[in-house]
Length: 116
Image (cartoon, rainbow, N blue to C red):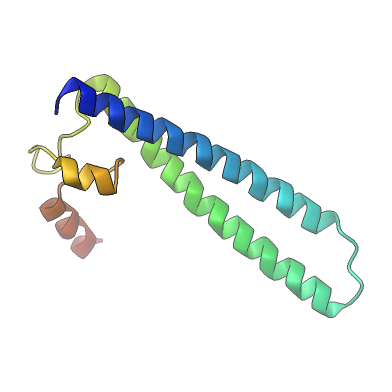
């Protein structure tokens, strides 16, 4: 991977990181507002419970993605960003365009998913 491509992927990862941090902050604010809101009946309470569970699930999923992004950024700093962690071959640029925080090439990703 050339230096320009690496800069582009780093920017993509940093932009996504920023968006996730904003999303998580919004989820936390919304959960706080829901928990402090006045409930007038069981339907309102059920709606708040469902909304809170949904927000918490989304927040956990985004937190996991944030960890993957942080790891990918550390790999950029180490110079191992586009190297598959299983076979140690290059991860194709096309794969990284789809998932910039990919740790495995396509073949190895399928192996990991089948064994998980």
